[in-house]
Length: 155
Image 1: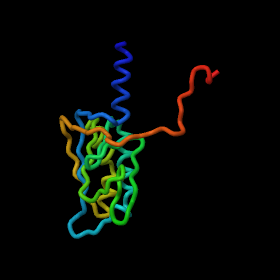
Image 2: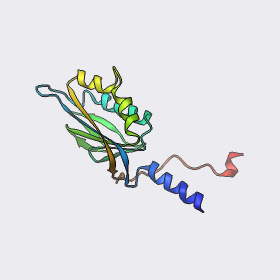
Image 3: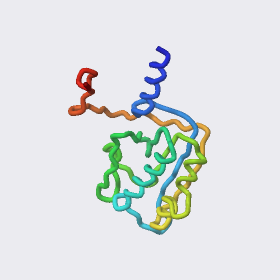
Image 4: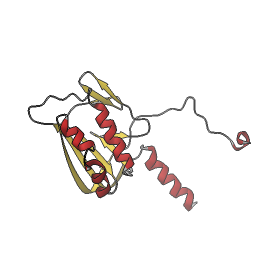
């Protein structure tokens, strides 16, 4: 029962449907003064930043309060982006729960995502925090096609 309870707790975190807290990093992204940048035309950099965070082993991510999960879409629309169907404009605040030194190292290496964002007109401010709160995803996900395989079907 104890192992099942621990596994259930892990799955609650992984699913993204539950509020979580822990140490991590807050990344603020905005436009440099006197520059015009369009989130829609540079959304691939936000996607890359999320990939770098995942590569750094973060356990939870939110973007302007929207929980990032396996099902989150980041879609360019006009001059902004939609995340989980919610329109986002600058500034962006990305919260990531994980080991701050690893997160910062994965973002700040020479030629990495921070320098790329800087080159195209963004400012990136990275701060570690001893406690970050990330709210759970408040949407619903219904599975229409994927079904679990029963033990009888596996053989």
